[in-house]
View (cartoon, rainbow, N blue to C red):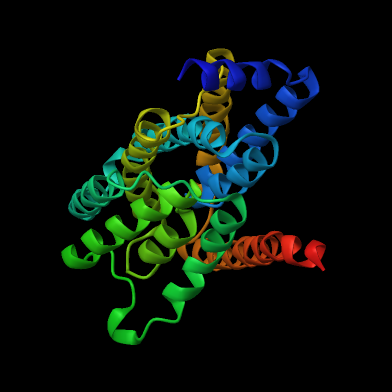
Length: 266
């Protein structure tokens, strides 16, 4: 839509050099974090983007950066990818996108933040018989569908896919590599959805997108040595702690934003 594209372009042009520099620093830092744990970086980045950009634009730029960082991470750890788990996950993603495209739903920012933070806690409360197992074909397909729907609702799926892969017996390299492969496909589908399918698609400045890709690749590369130096026990301990802290924040933030209109009405 020409009107929307020009409005989005004008909004992006008003970004000061300081804002652009801050964004690039955030992308470098979050890709470094994701390069170590295979998660958390995208979760933090989407919160930053949602704070300064319209939701569709934030989703598009986030999709570009996450495809770059996850794609490069997948290449760095290519030999450790568990392709059976990735294939099942992708099947679930395709089903979810096909169904979601019928509604073209775009959530509000508060609802996106609330759902984003709540899903990992819900997964942890599941009974033992339903605990995540990335080596299960059925679970892989189900989680793929749920994660894809969450991607379209919130822009990221890190906490839930992290919980899924941490639930099995894969080592840290297999977890990071397999998640990266899954995330490349998921974010590609998200990019298509928010860039083409919805009635008011998002846009992004090509220059900012290019710089974001470079920052993501650099951060991911720098993180490789840190991941090698960690033990599997350290990896799982830190990953679970990071998920809990970040998701707890998003639940509180989303709940506050939802409550504000009612508080102001009084």
